[in-house]
Amino acid sequence: MKRVLLTTTSYQDTPGDHHALLEGQGFEIVRERGPLTEERMLELAGDFDAFLCGDDAITRGVIEKSLPRLQVISKYGIGLDKIDLATCNENKLPVLFTPGVNHTTVAEHCLMLLLAISKQLVDHANWVRAGEWKRKTGHEIWKKRIGLAGFGRIGREVALRAKAFEMEVTAFDIYWPEEFANEHGFKRAASLDELFETSDVLSLHTNLSEETRGLVNAERLAKMPKDSIVLNTARGELVDNDAIIAALDSGQLAGYGTDVLDVEPPEPDHPLIRHPKVLVTPHIGSRTYESVPRQAMRATENLIHFLSGEGEYLQANKFD
Image 1 (cartoon, rainbow, N blue to C red):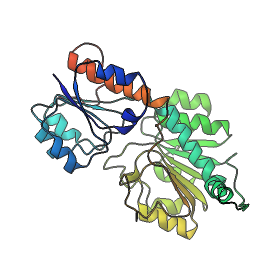
Image 2 (cartoon, one colour):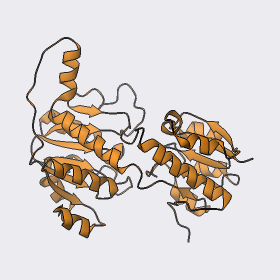
Image 3 (tube, rainbow, N blue to C red):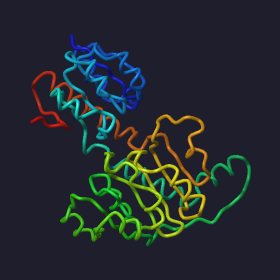
């Protein structure tokens, strides 16, 4: 009997056909509430044939302790930065993932953050709930310039929704979808610095790597127009927290809306979560009743097809 460690809470908490599919395979399923720390993963490592994981810390130490029994890692989602891919490649350990199933819901979440910040939605709703009829004056997003750092599936979906608000869309990506951009009139920035300089709203849609860590820093924030907004539905480590706070306090930034933090869940004294110009949601951009079953089914099918040797699966890493 194959033994599978299931850690993703979105998968476990949301109804859908994925539950019956996984439970019908005859696996022994051990459920944990992730994302798990490296310490907890090390406690569990070595006793499983497969991980069906979220953003757990799957480090070199975890992988090495898991082998030789561990046959495959099936990631629920597309972000692979918490998995040590180099160690997986060294040991020819396949990592499966689920691209193309959550881009619409994350794009919706991104626009929600933008509208909430622009209209001061949270303050207004909280005041009314507290019995106060207080009002601030907000801003339109109509005709504003939005810059997208990353123009993959999610970035393109955000662009389409921004276009519906008649925003001026510019994007930067090494891999440029020429036909799509030309069809919709989206502009290509020549560099990241140009993107920051020309964006009233800067939205992050790139993966986390050593090259992109701290992509949003003090130098680049200083290039943005005054009272601009930064949105992050990608990874918390893409931004320098201290630089964001300094820009908010100086008035350079009007707001920071993020669904991700560098530490999740954060400590109570995390510098961003109580700042009056910051809107933080708890990494729920793809957590909808529509999106979760799509991701969960893809992750489950990947796992089943790999272990059975029958059917197709999507593998993120390639071996020499």
